[in-house]
Image 1 (cartoon, rainbow, N blue to C red):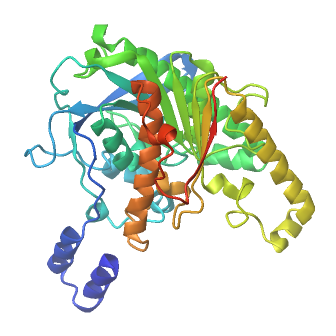
Image 2 (cartoon, rainbow, N blue to C red; image 1 turned 45 degrees about the vertical axis):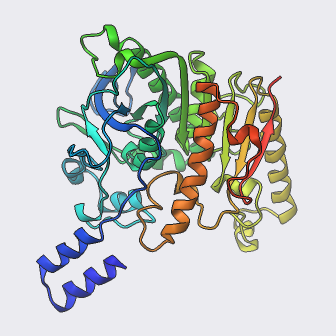
Image 3 (cartoon, rainbow, N blue to C red; image 1 turned 90 degrees about the horizontal axis):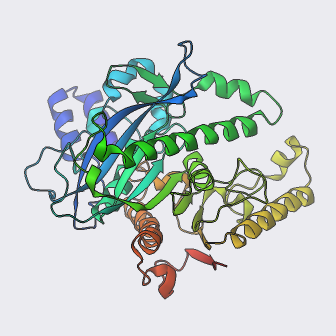
Length: 428
């Protein structure tokens, strides 16, 4: 509604001051973190010398990434601390990002300039929470095209419950990554398009990008675990990392990345995939169906629900004709994917969970990000409820495996929402 009001005022009155006043009054907001801690943040420009960067226009370039560490502080909203901007670097990156990419980055919300962005409770370079308590460290990977800042609500909330989160901005897989020296890399659209033109090209390209993103996680983790003794990588949180309690999670392709991270890095003790599987129904896209992971695993199913829900993404009869498939052939493919996925989850030694959320009204693939919370055309109350449901299970999983809490909703059987269907595959 706020955008409609602003448009009417511009069209009939052209009174800029009035319009700005309305934007300020109706600026979108994110849910306040539910835990006892505030949130600090610091960014690091890291280059992995062992990994080449074939997508860089520079010859012999090495893999460069931005890692933003979000950590607990004593400060809470209202303590007169200056909060960090919601999307740092966006103004500098705009000239190198198409208007279409910016629009898609926010969809189903609408970007109409700085006034359409929320405020945060994050404080850059804040002091870490007082005391000597050490906190679990979680690695986070974004979805394709999304910058990590579009997950601010989720990351703020997790940190408020006593976690350090290292969110890796994977270059060429997000719409923009801005480095401290002013360099900006965009999404590798040309490479994506070229892959899409080849038979099964996107499968191969996705697999390749997941491997690279998982290596980013591996390298970033090594640097962060050594940061207390490093002059190059110093931070207020460095001596407060519990090195024995490392987890990984991610959304979309970032979820596939988290699963791959558990496969290649035994330092990571539990992994979560927020709604992504491959054409086989597997969240382990890089490996064959026989290889999963040893660590506990959590899989959300929402827009990958075409495997499970007849009302989600299943094609119409006309679309099946275009794909040269009959309905029985399509059903057979879905059944095979269901069997593959269930067998893999049941085979994980540390145990696993599958949470199906596609029966919640308004819960879509992007509900793990801020995009649905910022969309004025959606039911904001329902978006908040969906956020709460997902956060409850995310925190429950990591509280159980990072903090040893055996009384979470994963164990008590308590229903967060009866439409959220949790399946448990015990450890063995």
